[in-house]
Image (tube, helix red, strand yellow):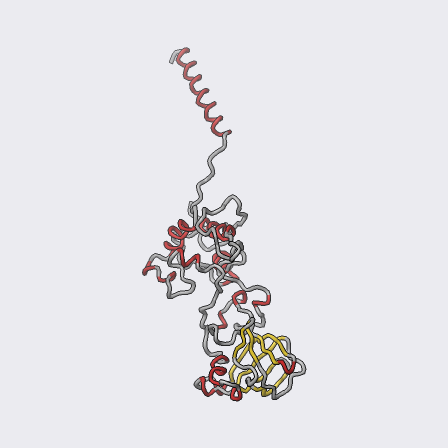
Length: 305
């Protein structure tokens, strides 16, 4: 190459190099998020992690029902572990608020921590139950045997008793035995106190410590599956990144990874409700820019290169 040709080649290289420098100093486009909104996260993340057997681990036979994006959104503010048939397996954060034993004649209004049937009555038909033992918090003072104006209250709802309620058969500190045979409408009262049925549903007694570990979870927090604006307070999120809540999910990673965890966390963080408490932006683009959640490396599924 002659000197003139070399000079022109060097000049061309210099121009191209200068262009390259100019491009690097301009604003570079931000990385496109893996999931733009909850529809993409569901279609590419939730659905594909359980695509075998018609998505059986996310269908309506399991709680919560995550086989559609509508089902996922429907978990907002819904209770966790509400389908657990063994109360020992209920996480403290999922324990419901305790029903209260109220006895107006004795000035008693205390939480019911636990309820048990007598060992000899474990196999009886519900119609033949005669008594239930309650552990109360705090321990009642001034309560004597024989009171029949017993009530069980859940917020403003009164269950199982009233003026002709179950009779107080014995009192031993925090432990109170109720005789169910004297209650008005005793069949419905016995059914209400039949703690063998799990989960109890709305028409049976709700105790404060169903797993029996000495902690009344609802006294500190009652954690929904998804809490609006609060990823840390959402059970689904904690199951993905915090093994103190149980075996990390999902069972099969497939397309789920750190990016999916961050997308879910940022989606939850950005949820907003109107004055009536209805979520108003579930399908909006996920606000990554305004999301400070950091979950990389906390989940079971690593992000592929």
